[in-house]
Length: 165
Image (cartoon, rainbow, N blue to C red; front, side, top):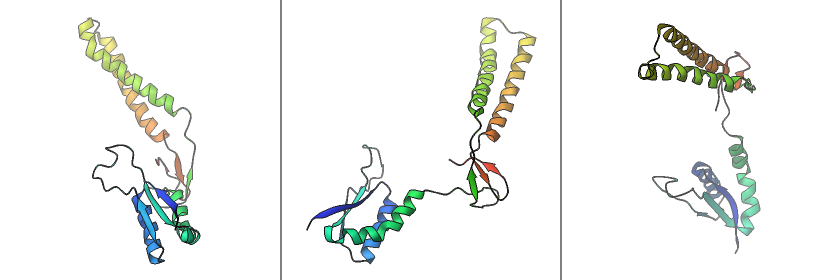
């Protein structure tokens, strides 16, 4: 009898769910490329676990594992960290977020470099110290602003905006 590739997955949990379904329904299968390495990916990319079934059982097996495959493609659903609701909508990030973050980094680096090298270059003065401190404080303020500006989800129930990766 000829074997056909039923499913190939990089996730061992999904492969295990498929194998359990095949076991319960008495469908003969064969797993291939199942590695039990303690350091996954240390010796190259993980090939993924392949599950093969006989040609005569292929259509039935595909029908049985269809819910697992559909469930696997959805991915994790975000939930609100404040109220726990799953009624969450995606909101676009403001275009100025990257500019604000870059400006905060620059406003942090310039005074830092000034304080490190001003004594060596003999350019230290009270006025420049005050300007450097103001720039440093403004960079910290911009970092706080960018944290609240860099959000991509909003809860429909409580209105909380949050970042979900």
